[in-house]
Length: 296
Picture 1 (cartoon, helix red, strand yellow):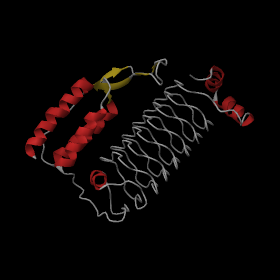
Picture 2 (cartoon, helix red, strand yellow; picture 1 turned 180 degrees about the vertical axis):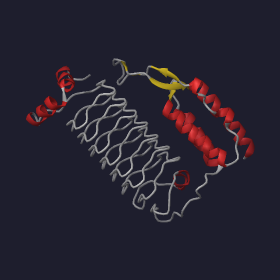
Picture 3 (cartoon, helix red, strand yellow; picture 1 turned 45 degrees about the vertical axis):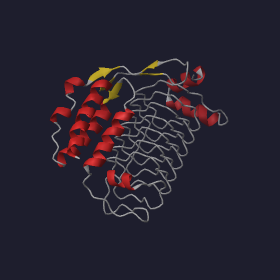
Picture 4 (cartoon, helix red, strand yellow; picture 1 turned 135 degrees about the vertical axis):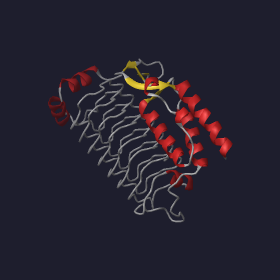
């Protein structure tokens, strides 16, 4: 749990907070489990801060200093980290769907197993970052720096990597390059040829299966539904009818998400978000997969 004095000072205002940080360089802020959805923390000095399990959905952190911050398992959906400094920050298992990371610095950051779907990380510095097992589906990374980044087992379906140098990236597979969106300016690792811009039905089936496997909760957030619909548009280019597989607007409802950051810890309620019932979502995927497998 967060140190009550540290949390109260942060809520008091960024001017007082940053002044306190300058005067207390040896103190590591303890903000574990902090719940400040939609807060304006732009320019905040949160370097080295303990923010594991924090709930910062739709928070504004433009230009914030988060160097070496511990953001493990944090819920930071749709947060704005534009121009933020997350050098060597620990975001293992964090959920960042829909976040803005444009021009941010994440060099050396730990993003193992993080949910980074539909994220804008264009022109971000992600050199030597660890994305092993992370989910970057439908994200935009044009012009990002990924030199020596670890992409082993990362999901890259529909991830836009235009004008990205992947030559020194680690763990890159042929399947990842087949499913990502590349262009003539994308530099591929040695031994890999340019991929077909049209995904095969087999790779689209794999993407659907991965999407279903990752829907482990009771509800599926709206950004995941958007990613699913983007996949359906890809299927339509292959001549597959997808009208019956779509999620209608009426089926997307507001829900209150709760999250327990530690075993036996207190569950925090966060601001309502939109989503769809996971059982319905998986049924649509199963029906679509049945149709696709008959075509293969």
